[in-house]
Image 1 (cartoon, helix red, strand yellow):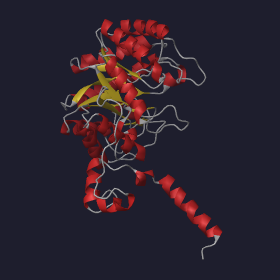
Image 2 (cartoon, helix red, strand yellow):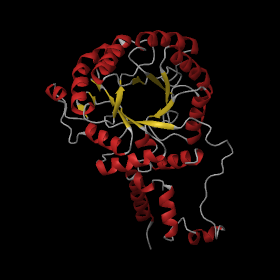
Image 3 (tube, rainbow, N blue to C red):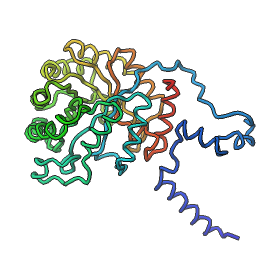
Image 4 (tube, rainbow, N blue to C red):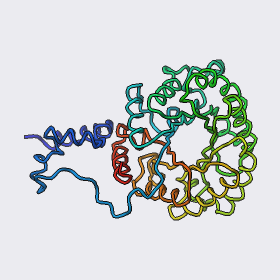
Length: 372
């Protein structure tokens, strides 16, 4: 007979394994569920016989809200230079499969969130390597351009982030390095791949920030000049109550006033703004979204939303978002007439092959809601 100590030890090992290998618990896609059912697996009628559902196959959730009432996500960031979410260590095989999952739900735009952060970089940049950055083992920019071409998507290149802005609060520090990065990236990739579709100016701000207008304008202007006018965009956050713990957050009035000044200074070289939607509460979405759309229209810019698919309300940073929270944000974007929804970011928080099992479940719920 197994003694109590042995039982506890085995139970602890099993629990640790479940935590260490979250991929084991990933969600099945609809195709996998069908295949599993046909093979007599847990999803088959035989497996369900003991539960009182003999003769029935698995079905979609019964939604009690109108379906497809939000703005569909058609773009995603690609986060391979990160400092606050885990690396999934994918090779091209895994990335190819992920692009196929993206394509299946209508994603047509992929955005490398940044080409480098401090010393880690996504491509063998002659300029950044000379400055002491680390040599990457794979040229991710080339791979992303090729996969975007294969799946009929447009690839947006995210500029380099030296980290000095985060250290000093002055965005103008990011101009100098990116003068060289923009030129070499266009020569290495932009001029070679027709999938290279635009630029992401990766400096993230929330309010009137030192050097922001001049930095956005200088980098946006150079991006457009070197590429023959390809589109550029930014993705700031709204300085809401979730931005800083215990803070009241910016008022709608102050948000409008400060971003009116910023848009006035950058609209000639920045084509779209995709405000991050996770720092305000769900009952504040319409008020802030209405202002964002109003300002974008005023300055002839596209109004996108960065519909975050990770959950800022949880004590753990960061896990896939609850579907209803994502649904409410996408519905608000549609009500307010937004032009496009992108997300941060599909591969970790929404992909069927994410390290997080809940991401695949979110993918399935999204497909049910939009009847994909």
